[in-house]
Length: 231
Image 1 (cartoon, rainbow, N blue to C red):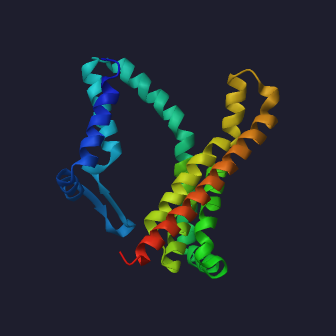
Image 2 (cartoon, rainbow, N blue to C red):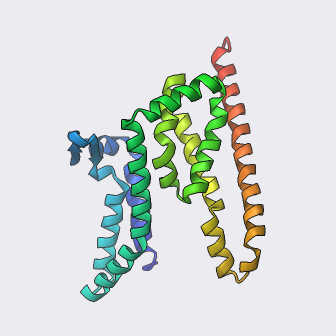
Image 3 (cartoon, one colour):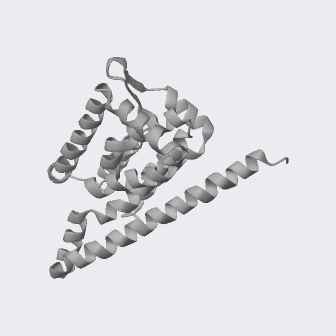
């Protein structure tokens, strides 16, 4: 239980901030870091990262970690997250360049004109492509979330629904990222079966996207029928 306590602390902290509406209102309006010139706002007390930091402090105090141990942990962490940070930063920069070059608006208008209301069934393919190419849900969102939301705005679709489609599809296809499969095959001692594993897992990923499309069809038609029902 002591070893699990940092995780329990983190889960409890996040659960409290997400399930109590009164606390959500408070945390979203106090200690907010705002940089208008960069269009950046961070509600510090509502950010998951803030509670990760508190969990780290709790671990340091609870386990009485020495300065040497803390320094080693920081070095290992920096070494691990630097490649992820740089790649994600690159995706974010690319997305922002596309926004300021008006590329997102142009592409979203073309999508809206070509696909119309059927775009809801194209959105999972775009999200899945992001997950497959980047191997990261964060990277996929950095690449495509603004395009998805702008297209939803043009077609007057629910932005929450489109954001859900983007995150769900990219999360499923993340597991088809070739580097993940190579790593898993190497660890499992079956490196010679990389191509076979990639083919199978890619088909499974496509199957999940098809199931997601079916869910979208059922959900949208059910909600539509309820909306026009006389009751």
